Amino acid sequence: MGNRKPFVAANWKLHGSRSQLERFTTACLKGLSDDVETVLCPSHVHLDFASNLLAEQSLMKLGAQSVSQHKSGAYTGEVSCEMLIEAGCRYVIVGHSERRRLFGETSFIVAEKFAAVRAAGLIPILCLGESGAARQARRTFEVIAEELDIVLEKNGAMAFDNAIIAYEPIWAVGTGKCATPEQAQEVHSFIRGRLAEDTPVIGDKVRIIYGGSLTPANARDLFAQPDVDGGLIGGASLDDQAFLGIVEAAK
Ligand code: PEP
Image 1 (cartoon, rainbow, N blue to C red):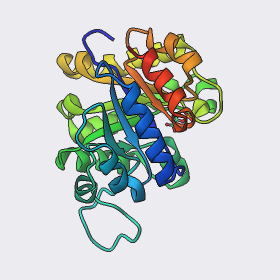
Image 2 (image 1 turned 60 degrees about the horizontal axis):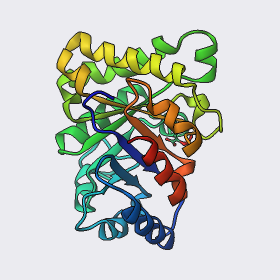
Image 3 (image 1 turned 90 degrees about the vertical axis):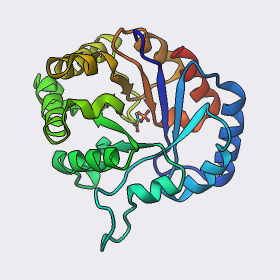
Image 4 (image 1 turned 135 degrees about the vertical axis):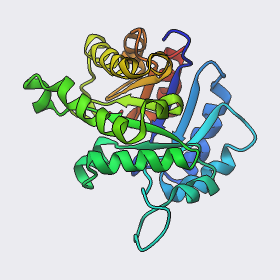
């Protein structure tokens, strides 16, 4: 991880209730220390409530799972960056594979969302990842480069001065099939190298986290890789002890 502070985020997807949030944050705030930066991303509806639970401490911050690229207007069902800021958010997941696959978010829209998040002063967590078919066809680097380059072209490498990248192979998200440490490391190193080619200081500084079926049992080996700076956790983050176990592995 070099000098980069480990970063672990919980993506609760379409799960959770106020009482679950109360239990989770109480347990986490007892178990966390400031060696690892942690972020909780509950549903939009729960952000205000979670923000109150996380007030007056700095061990766990608040993030959103998605955002509109628009500031305001006739976009029924959408949520803007300003609304997220009012709700106490600091981070926003952008380009999660479920948003890309199930909700038609193209790489172009993802690049616009990344720009909107940065312009609002929020910190994007940009997800990149190849499908199982792309990996089998040995197109992993090509897909990652395409997804990254469109964001780079629109925003420039300096935009990654305050951004997180999550490598999330689609075949590993929610499947129970985690990437091997070697598979993760080679893609993380490729992403870092691509940013470094443009702006060396950014390549060195940007935190690149791994996501895809992480558990306390497999996290330590993944996090031991030199270019893996933490994790984005879906399923296992619904259980406070599992989440804390993964955070522990990131120290
Ligand atoms: C995710 O949704 O970002 C994720 C990594 O999910 P899971 O940990 O369940 O694979």
